[in-house]
Amino acid sequence: MRLVCVYKQIPPSLESLTLRNVGWIVVTQSLLSASLHQFLYHSEQLTTDYVAEPLSTTLFNWGAMATGDALGSMAVIFAVLIGYRIYTSKNSH
Image (cartoon, rainbow, N blue to C red; front, side):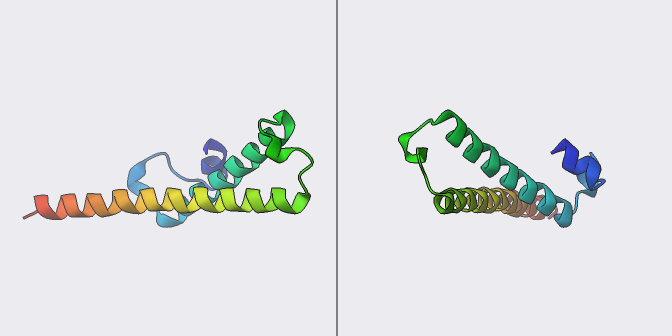
């Protein structure tokens, strides 16, 4: 995440965090997480499911994991945003 923040010049302050910056962080982290998991599963053979697995299955698993990570991160971010808006609207009256 630090490398993405430096490369995209994302400020460390949450006050100036934009939706585009959050999108960059979510996408890069989901791709990195899926890639590292697939690498570890193949190199360490943590389960027999990855022994002699075809490349198409590996790519499918990688895509499914990356998509799930991205959607899960976005769901959490939107839930926090909705909760924050509800909280601030109730406290402003």
